[in-house]
Structures are given as structure tokens and as C-alpha cells.
Amino acid sequence: MELLDGKSCSQEIRREIANTVAQLKAEGKRAPHLAAILVGDDGASETYVANKVKDCEEVGFDSTVIRLPAATSEDELLAEVDKLNNNSNIDGFIVQLPLPDHIDEHRVTLAIDPYKDVDGFCPANVGNMCLGLPTFVSATPNGIMELLARYKIDTTGKHCVVLGRSNIVGTPMAILMSRNTNPGNCTVTLAHSRTQNLTELCASADILVAAIGRPNFVTADMVKPGAIVIDVGITRVEDSSRASGFKLVGDVDFEAVADKSAYITPVPGGVGPMTRASLMQNTLKAYQR
Ligand code: NAP
Image 1 (cartoon, rainbow, N blue to C red):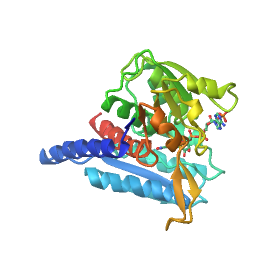
Image 2 (image 1 turned 90 degrees about the vertical axis):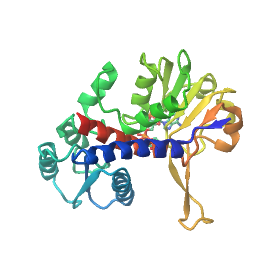
Image 3 (image 1 turned 135 degrees about the horizontal axis):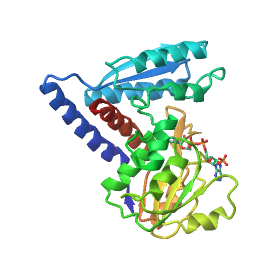
């Protein structure tokens, strides 16, 4: 078994980006600039945005956080999106999800200029991804593709089972793995909560991507010997032995599955850091555009 080490791989990516930014600055150019809109005071969202600011600092990007109260109306948020769309100093921006219930996420996502949509959530970018056209691929699938590429894993002709069909992870992952690219060129099965014979299906996968948010769901009997296992899941599980009071657990029962697999991502330290690095890659791409 070989660990797909997202932590070290993401550090390598951040170093590469930092070198590019240092070069730009040496040429007298401005740094790439990422903005984030944060509505309300959701603790997890605060942490995600703080991490994005930290990542920007590390690679030499400028960053701006626009904090809006939870009571912000949809129209007020759309006005902020419009300002960022028209601010030529901002290369890319994200609207941190989830939004308060009274705001229609879909309307907000639609309002973002596709050239600044570094999360890759807006329909134009999803459509471009499906057609294999230049786009921003959403951070998690992009990070997984990058991890497979950097480990030079041959995916051609393999059977890839993707567990979970969310718009931000499972569905784009299935599309990317099925395209005529490298990594890619897989025969893909996209499974979800209504899929039958899940154990047999997963056990037939050469590449298994688990993105369902159910801790330790994938057990050893669901994994083919020699499979490549990508664990996207992150669930906080109570753990009184830790100062934080919780630990992060993936969708894969790592202890049981690791020895059976050829490659496996750990949680934490696998897909998570690759997701963060992907946002930096997308921001640099937006700047270069
Ligand atoms: P989501 O929107 O909640 O979607 C979950 C998907 O899993 C749905 O398609 C659901 O099927 C399917 N599912 C749920 N239970 C299932 C079961 N028992 N058997 C088969 N399929 C089942 O989740 P998400 O946003 O994609 O996130 C998935 C996990 O990845 C979460 O733990 C999340 O925290 C994590 N995540 C990690 C990163 C990272 O950077 N590492 C990034 C994003 C998300 P239905 O469609 O039929 O309901």
C-alpha cells in the first residue's frame, strides 16, 4: 500500500505557486487577488475562510474578506457580488456556502462572473467542464485529479466507482474520470443512496472515490485487492481524548482497507489539503487569464 499524501503534494503545489508569484512581483506586477464573501457567523465557514486567507498569505496572494451579517438580504448580497464582478483588482472570488436559508444559493452562484468563479460552481463553468473546455473545475475534484496525476497513476480503462453524486464532488468527479484525458479514460459508475448491491459494485472498482459523508462506511469487503481508494469524506466525530473534543473521520474504514489497497488517501492529510491548494491554483489561473 502506498499513501497518497495530499499534505506533501499540496505543499509542493503551494511552493510552485509562491515561486510564480515571486517572479511576477520581481517583474513589477501586482499579486493575484482572491476575495471571499462570508455571510453570517457559521463557525465552520469562518474556519474555511480563515484557511483560505492563510493559504493566500503563504503563496503571496492578496486576499479580501467581505463579512456580511446573517440578516443580509439576497439583493444586498447580489450587489456585493456585482461589485466584485466589476472590481478589476479582484481576480477571483468565492461566496462561502452554506448561505442563510432566506438566500437562494442558486441565484447567487448564477450571478458570479464565470471568469472570476474560482470555485467552479456556476453553470457556465460546470458546462465547460462537461465539454472539456477551459474552465475552473471545483476545488475538490480538481485536487483529486491533481493528486492522481502527480502520483502518475494510470487510470486508463479502469472501472471507477464514485460514491455520492453531489454537485460539488461526486458528479464532477464522475465526469472528469470518464473524459478522454489523463487521468481519466475510466469506465465510471456513479452510485448514490438509491444504488442497489453497493457492496458488490464497490468491490468491482479499480478506483473507488468515496464522497458521502458517512464515517467508516467503506469496509474491507467493499474494496477490491489492489484498488486505488480516494476518501473525500470528512465528518467530525466526538473524541474526548483530544483537546478539541473531536476527530476528523473519513468515509473509508482506513485501518481495515489500507492493506488491501494499492493506494489510499488518509483523512486528514489526503483530499482536504489538495482542495485548499486547488483554490490557489484556480486563483492564479484567473489572474493569468
Ligand atoms: P452531500 O452533498 O451530502 O452528498 C452526499 C452524497 O452521498 C449524496 O449523493 C447521497 O446520495 C450519497 N449518499 C449518502 N448516503 C449514502 C449511502 N448510504 N450510500 C450511498 N450513497 C450515499 O455531500 P458532499 O458535499 O459531496 O460531501 C461528501 C463528504 O465529503 C462530506 O463528508 C464532506 O464533508 C466531504 N467533503 C470533503 C471535502 C474535502 O476537501 N476533503 C470537500 C467537500 C466535501 P443521494 O444523492 O441519493 O442523497
